[in-house]
Image 1 (cartoon, rainbow, N blue to C red):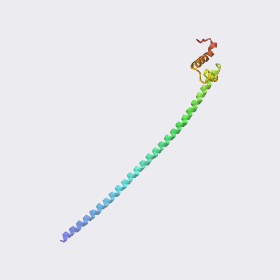
Image 2 (tube, one colour):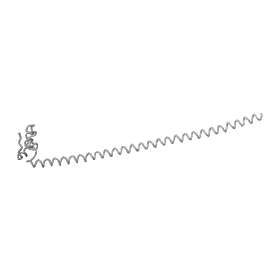
Image 3 (spheres, rainbow, N blue to C red):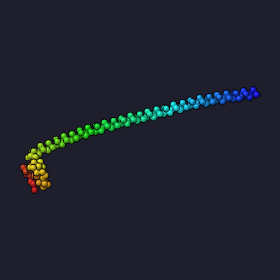
Image 4 (cartoon, one colour):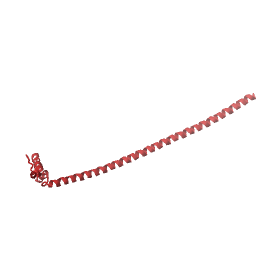
Length: 140
């Protein structure tokens, strides 16, 4: 009978030791899983922060490009205006070599609000050929 009691005692001790080992493995496994879950959350947070920084940089770059485009638009407009003014000055200076202001300006200078198509056309034709009278060309 003593052998049977010793067997039960050993069996209970063995079950107790196995239960302690299983409890230790369960606690270690749970802690490991929690640690891995926290690492995943931290990695996701780092990715979110990196993406937010990239989006912020892209937005700032886009804003700077828009500001640069606006500045370039103003520069191109000014250059275009300067070129137009220079071309107008050159054309008017070459027109003055042939006898004065262009016909359209002379028509408006007379006080008429709107020239008729025929008078403008005939005036332009006369003006265009006014410088060729000395060269022997004829207007038909």
